[in-house]
Image (tube, rainbow, N blue to C red; front, side, top):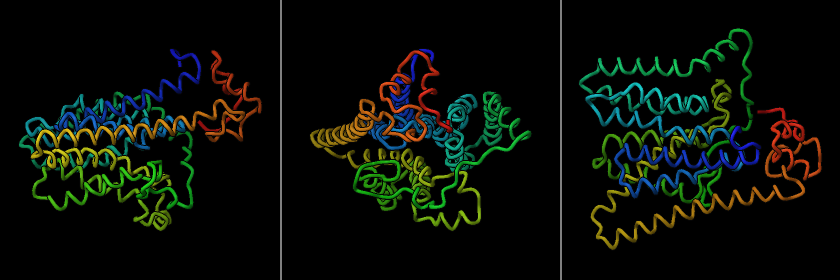
Length: 355
């Protein structure tokens, strides 16, 4: 906000950064997992085009910022499997966890939960278990230190007041993920991701003996969270017995882990399938992957352009959920509230009760 001077440019810049960091984080994770460079680029572009990332540009959803940074959490998790001599680097782990903790607590919870299998396997494999435990607690201490301002605020409110739970939706099954042959959106995986994820899971079980430990963990954990995000789980019945569903709010949030893990696992599969191809066939395969990633990015761009058309219309707020709280119906006044150099002007034209 300090550099952009108004809310309009702020949204443009932060949307760009959300996409950019998501792609950078996914590429960094793929490189750490020793995925071939070309396939790393491919899955990074696919991840950038996923609804979990693009939803910030479309509706300012903060979950997307968690999605942009969460691949960094899995870089230390992959190290635990690959490096048996020194499975944990405390500073690396602390910075990765803190980067997500600053942004979105629920995403941090999902990241830690999905990392547990990696650390269990890494602990069983390493010969330096004492060193690993020591480095782990050093990382925990550093993470607490880096998040001390957030933790103190959370603790102070918890002791002196009552935190309000997220809104609970009775029709929980309406907020699950489903397989579809249409576009990828916040509930639907779309044709590309549906085919990709299902293919990876089925191929994994067919070629179980030819997979590495990292591949097995990525596919099994990714498949587990994919199932959790769908209506295959009786979420409405579960919500009758526990408040956990109320905290999660939308079961479809679990699919974030599936996007990351199954994309990395799919990259491993692509390497195996193209390993014995001649140069010409590899060129055809790479060209097809480039075309697919371009189409996915173009589709996101089209959705953003459609949403942005509202800005020039007589109802600039029609693409969002601000309409009930506008203080003026003059479109020029609404646009001026977000483009003027005075930050407070936006709050004069819209009195929104939520952050």
